Amino acid sequence: MRIVMGAQNCGFGPVAELVAVSRPLHAHERVFVGDGVAAVFARRNPDAFDTVHDIGGLSGDARSAVMDDLLRGSDHVVSVMDAELVVRSVVARRPVTMVDSLFSFWQLTRPPARIREVCATMPRSRYSAADRHLAGLSPHERVVAAHLLATHSVVQNFPGVTERAAGLAALGGGPEIHLTGSIIDVEGARNAAGATGPEYDLLINIGGFKNFLLDFDVNNAYVRLLHQWLPDLLRDWPQFRRVLVCGGPFGEGRERTVRSAGGGRADCRLLRQRDLLQVAAGTADYLMAPGLTALHEAVALGRLPLALHEQHYAHVFTMRALDGTLFGHAGCRFTDVVPDHPLPEDDLAGTAALAELAGRVQEDSGLYATYRRRFNERIEQYLSLTPAQRRHGAGELGKLLDGAPVQAVMTEVLGAAHPA
Image (cartoon, rainbow, N blue to C red; front, side):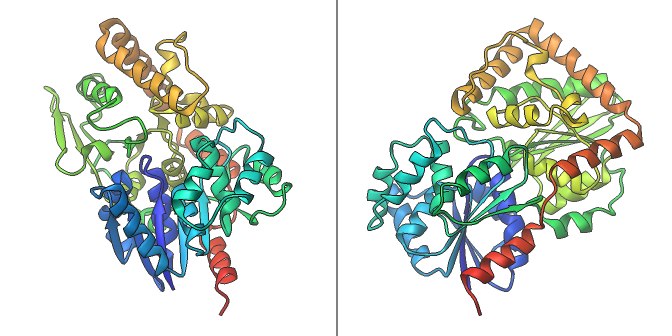
C-alpha cells in the first residue's frame, strides 16, 4: 500500500507524531509531503519515510500540483492535524485518516452542528472550490471539520477529549473516533529506556518552536531570552557542568555552544528524534517546553520533566489542563514574572501576547531579574523532589493520558479501510 503522509507545520509535535505512526508501517510505501519545520524534522528522521517531498520552496500552483499528483497515486492518506491535506484527500477521493493530539484544544466559535452542515455541503469537484466553501471557518474549526470529513479519526487522550468525541459522534454521519494513548515512537522509547548518563547533567528541550507566528528570526523573543538566560543558568547552577539544549532553532547550521567562566557549557543542537530519546532517558534532570508529544515521551521513559515557560497558547492550555498534577503545579509560567499581563483566550492573540511578554522580559532588566529568580526557585523545587516523588509525578500523568496503543489503532484503521 502506498501511504501519503503529512503533518501540520506547527512545531515538532505533529510531525513527531507522524513519525511515530509511520515507523511501524514499514511494510508499506510511506511518502511524506510537507514544508517548514515539518519537512526539517522528516529529513532529520529519514528512516521513518521511504520518500520525503519538501514543497516549501514551491509556488502555490506548483505546490498544489505536487500534492495532488501524490494523492492521485496513493492508496491511503495519513494527516496529523493538517486540515488542508484532509480536504485535498477528500477531493481526490482517497481514504484519509486524521490523527490529532490536540483534539480538545480547538476553539469553536460556532456550534459543531453548523460545522457539520458546512462539511456536508462542501463541493468535492476541485480543491479550490472546497477551500472557498470552508473559508468562513476559523483555523481551529477547519481542524474539527477535517475530522468530520475524514474516513477515520484518531485522537490522543487528554482531558476534554472524550467529551468532544461524544459531542461530534452525536451529530451522526461522521467517522468513528478512535481514542489512543501516547502517539509516540514506542520502539524508540523502549530502546532508549536502558540508556544511562552521565553525558549530560541537564537536558533542555524547547521543541520545534516555529509555528504560524513564531519563527527563528521573526517573533523570536523567546529564543533570544533563552540565549540571554543560558550563561546565567551555568553561573547559578554550577553542578550542571554540561547542558544539552535541543530544538528547532538550533538546526541547519544554527548550532552554538555557550560557556561559563566556571567551566560549564551548554551545547545548543538539533538531534534526531531517537537520539533525543536516548539523551532524555539517560539524563537525570530534564527541562522541556510543555508540548504534549515531548511530555508523552518523557512519561514513557519514566521521567518527570520541569515545564519551561510557555511559547504559545497551546502550552497555556496544556498547563491549565494538568494543573492538578505535580507536573502542572511545579511548572514555570510567565505569570510568575508578570502576573497582570493580559493573555487573550485565543490561539493567535494569546501566542502574540506571550511573544510580547518574552520580549518585555528580555529587554527589561528588572523583569529579567524577576524571571531569573523565579526560574531558579522552580528549578530548586524540582531538584528537591525525591526519586519516589518523581516516579509518582510521572505515574499520575501516565494514568491521565492512558489509552489504546496507537500502533494497534492504526492497524485496525488501515485494515478496515483496505481489507485483504
